[in-house]
Image (cartoon, one colour):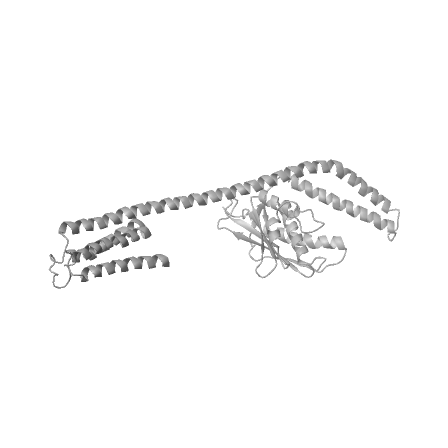
Length: 391
């Protein structure tokens, strides 16, 4: 089906041919100079048809012109003197004119077809060049990230030696001193702050080390539903341990509902390092819980994408985490997976960066988006594991 613009152009060409033919047929044969002009006018629609539709268009227009011109050119031979005007030119002129119609349609159409073919090749080359530039841009970004990782590696090695051991001594000393004071004593509370801050600094250092020196992936086939349920339990138990309070089942300390929706994950298995994938899911779910605020909701789901099963990379598992929070800002959508980017004053900006790195080590990908009805969405794509009984 031709575009509307081309349809209108084609219609215009054949209307022009019909008008020129009508002029031929209704002009007296005694006005030879007008017939000479009309024969030349036929070249214009032929050339236009060739420009619009290449060799095919030029040839079709030339053949149509010849078929319409022939009764007028050979009216005498066909016994149509009483019905149609005839071209007063000689037979040789008429034959040469028809040959030229076909030649002009063929040559012009061939040149235009060749030109359009070259244009398509240039457009394809331009698309390929654009893709190459995009690949170079991504490679440059990866080199920058690798440079950051190298800097973090050097920094973390120094931190491990210079900070971790003294930090352990500070924490241990503060705990011993705290035992000398009662629970309500102001100095005990100050020492507890010291202990808590030492623990927090140790956690920060641990994140730096985990990012700079990721552990190797030890894959095994695990049930996706069990991993997701385990993460829900860990999130809620973590808040119980922190607050010391009894929480409603499936809720954290802020009253956020954290649950696993089993729809779509029946029989779904993952070919992953379960310890690392739990860390990935914990990072994402804890971020979602913090984004929800009080009384929000976080839902975990799993589904299969791809027709084939097994460990050949054909099928992919999608683990999604949806929250009822405000969603991601445009800046966060762009930079959330970048090392050291954070929207929280107390954050290190390494949580999602570590998550991204682990997922990439598994040959997967991670996507952040805003849900149409509000809230954030994180989709983690991982390879599927073999299902027992599969060939």
